[in-house]
Image (cartoon, rainbow, N blue to C red):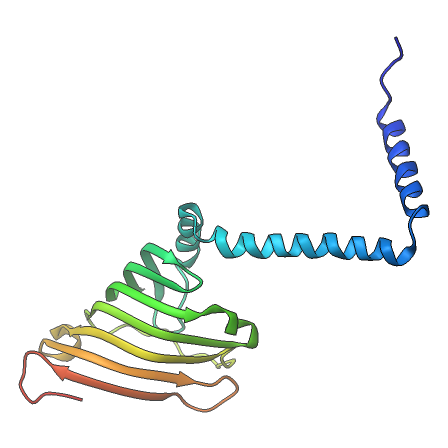
Length: 208
């Protein structure tokens, strides 16, 4: 009985086989085959990223990565209950922003529809943001202002709608509004463009 080949012998045999394959084909055909394999691998990777995010485990990982994200001077973000397709239409059951004193803003049942392909052109285009309830609990403790490095992308939100509640610690008396509007800001300079409408549900004639 002959002994099994060693690792060195197996590697040498694989190299010889590969050399014979390459010698038996023209160079253009070999390059085409290599490019085709690379294209298949890239397509598989993109599909894995696109549809892998739909898995519950992937959404949990995204949620964990987003928690603790610093939102400039406003505080830190936390989300709970991420659902849906994060690349097109997703929902968050609870969203909070916290400063050193704790949560100062809370949003419930936030739904977002957006166009992820435009991110590759450095544009964040959101078709709709809707929240069942947004509560501003108190005034935030803002961190010291730092030099702005500018936005990395332009932002456009076509439609915003929410039930907005402002507690006395923020607005001296409780306010409850139905809010709608849109928002846009371009990277590289210029202020935001905001269109908003707010109708009070507690005080007749109180509106924006």
